[in-house]
Length: 257
Image (tube, rainbow, N blue to C red; front, side, top):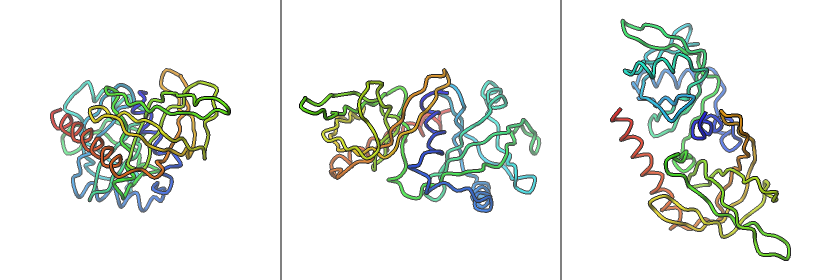
């Protein structure tokens, strides 16, 4: 699984978003019904490779315990979907970001056309405020955050950490392998975040949590969820502009598929 798609899965497990995760079957079914009724376009992220396609949930079946979604016009994509253990669905409904995993995927026919069926998701992420939505940073434009780590009686140790995702409220980075102290509650001032095509911003960050990710190749990395502290309006505006541009570019590519 790529770093981007791994991070999408982990967003559904992170403590950062636990308050926005739904587990109640009744609530999840209600949201799924709304997606069907509104014919919402859904971006489906495949479990390996940097690939996605647009689909829609066609209907709910088996007492709403399974859902049927449209197949891709690309047969190569459909073969990968049929072989996948899990897919990530991401969409928006009435300005609310919705994301959930799907598994138990089967090829079916619905109203005479190719489709897939999957088990109803047991958890669903619903982000009601734009500023809490974290953009997974594009692999093609890697983002780096330079963090000065204080050391007793020495100059700060400056490290470069790869940014996994970002929002107006904070970001997540891969903790470098150096043997340095980097844990929840620690604050770092003078961090320099370089936004591709927009330039650098200086921020103060507080580490909120750490947990481990395992990439598809078996490499384990440590992810740190950080929040911005006293973020200046100028920096917030630049970050929001960057997020908007990346999402706009992604949407344009998806419409062209």
